[in-house]
Image 1 (cartoon, rainbow, N blue to C red):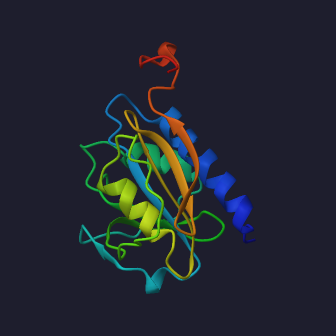
Image 2: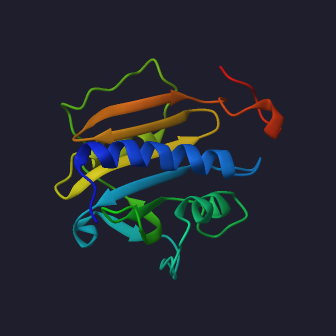
Length: 163
């Protein structure tokens, strides 16, 4: 079952929130690409092995690998339209989209811009990023569709409180 464009944006945002909630204190952040045509993406595997295998619980799998000790923590992970994992740890190099609106009041980095620009590629349904300090952002068609500022996870989990 494939999700509609609007459903995939909401589902990706919820997935990123779930990954952040499950990730440990060493959460290095994550970048996700949801694509109908993963073979056409400008990606390159960062590791010799990038097949995720059968991950029944995608949020749990992403939370476990999103720390510096795991070999697949870096880069972007590619998901299909139903949010199943296709590739892990991919270098993602989309072209710059000069017309993409950039909110420079946010303290973003390269992963944010790659997700923003990459969301405008044909076959990409949505992209998203999450990190403790930045927060969570989801993009579609070269625009930021949702954003939640960082440090929002409860202090009871041993992290900073709501900001």
